[in-house]
Image 1 (cartoon, rainbow, N blue to C red):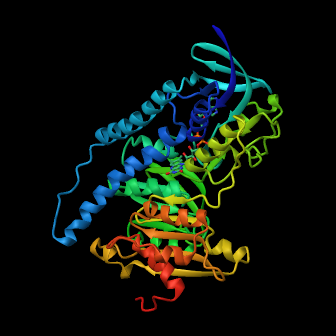
Image 2 (image 1 turned 90 degrees about the vertical axis):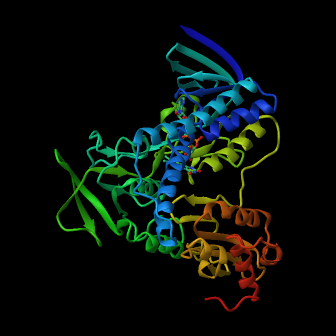
Image 3 (image 1 turned 135 degrees about the vertical axis):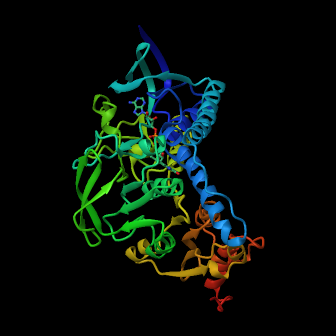
Length: 467
Ligand code: FAD
């Protein structure tokens, strides 16, 4: 069967970028078709990314918190893990959100076409679906095709004991010995989950720190806190994996490489994601895609073909859902005739680990590289009543100010709830607030957020007696 549809806007891919663009365009009165190869909307983020990982991290947090209560006089028994129930709870979380998107799409009269779409010209896309082919001719297109996991060539990728983030989220079993290859955010989050469920987790990272994008002092606090939980091999790489019947035998090289081969039951490969720019036949539309698969865009999110836009993971780093959503709104508004540009002062990054690590704006390292004249104020959580009462004093709040003006240029937090706390620093950076604005803001006591106001007061010189 062959269908033909004509529309003002077609959106290719229904992740956070795609569905946000489709909804905003429809809200602005445009006729929209949303093409998605998965059965459900939501893309990587809702189906196999942000949301299921946070559902499992919630389980991990409760297990870890319950164990920690023993030192405060409340002992719970050894947790009984029912993987089927955890899995179905995670699926119900996904279902609730993806189902919600389906409803929102219908309410806006966005037409959804299920199948794999490819450009056939700069005015048409062909979608190959279970019901046959659909040809969509459009006035404007938004490419929101996202990204895919990167496989490593020297790993037996077809061995079911080698998994990626999607495989890790499936939670088929809890391996006794698990190697996480790559110490970035996704690897550490999944390592946190499996460690709480009972795996011995080792992490190997080529760089000399975990989460290389964050400042070293922030990551060091995370690393010190987790020293006993994870075996961490920094400045080390995997050079070979020998798949045998009784396990995966790994050879390492580098500063902290163990001697000989080490046996693992499972390896999680979490070395990053590659953009899907080469998978949509962009060349048929004349859209330039670089050799890595990224599509270059202007501040209006236009590709080199002015009526074709691109957003989200496929246009560049950081590959984060909230960046995709904001780009989506810009693209939809520009198509509707509004004047808009994507030019954020900051895009927050959060590792939902334990403790969490969160940062926004310039990092201290970036400020130094850029030659900015900055002053850094650190508030250690050992001086926070709330942190002490929560028995989590390892954290700290770090604010980066422009020395001359006191303007907030960035900030980072490591500690429990760091991700939720970061919003205040995001707002300060985006608004161009200075230390006085932040310091004069009355923060409720006792909260962890107080540490942000106190860091501003440190910069202003009104606090000098910290531990
Ligand atoms: P995607 O979400 O990748 O969606 C693209 C969609 O397009 C997919 O559904 C794909 O099936 C579809 N598609 C692609 N090509 C075609 C085609 N030709 N035809 C039809 N459909 C097509 N980000 C955060 O901000 N916070 C987090 O906590 C977080 N956690 C993560 C955890 C994990 C395990 C992973 C893997 C990622 C995580 N991310 C997180 C990253 C986040 O998921 C992505 O940045 C985000 O999903 C990007 O959105 P997008 O719209 O660009 O693309």
